[in-house]
Amino acid sequence: MGSKVNNTLAAVIPAAGESSRTGTPKMLLPFGEETMIGRVISNFRESKAGEIVVVLGAWKDEILKVVSGYGVKYCINEDFKSGMLSSVICGINALSSGIEAALILPGDYPFITGSFIDEFTDAFFESGKGIAIPVAGGRNGHPIILRRKYFNIVQNINLPGGLRDIIRLSDEDVYKYQTDNHYIHTDIDTIEDYISLTGKI
Image (cartoon, rainbow, N blue to C red; front, side, top):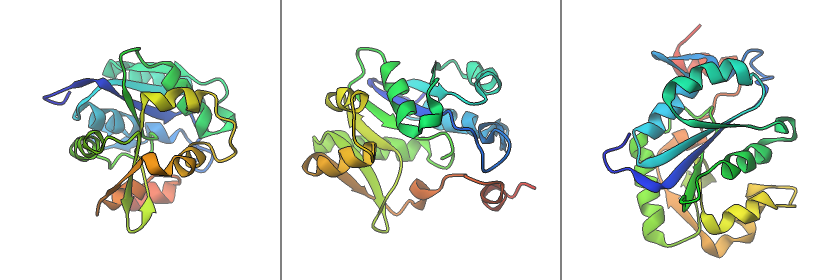
């Protein structure tokens, strides 16, 4: 865990997808001495996030065997085939009552470090805004931060664009954190991505 844990700040890690583009559960691909999902959890444990929730769906039994070794919370998204938003809702529903803000980062973004998470969240809290997104090269990236006042909105959302629509409709309350960290755009969707980014074959 980070040296100054913020127990009002949580991480939600959607890891429920079918990995249809890799043909194998990409969350379990080797990443250094860990798996990909393990690295994402470790990055959050090196940050100030006080609670970590991993959202499971497809491959839940296999991934849970890894996740359980990290001592984090998890939830099962039975509706994972409907898309990422259902996993975000599952994760938010699983958060403790004292959580005031949630970082949402899909489990295929292993290059977002604990130090970047802390820089981003510190700037967010100083901004006083309700939502934050990192921006590099004019493009929005991950993770996204939501204050508690948005949790209920996400849980009851009826917008086709999901979180993107909430961000668009709440523009005045969105803090755009400018960064040169292009890893905010770097997810691993395919085996080709995995090989090119990690050097694995």
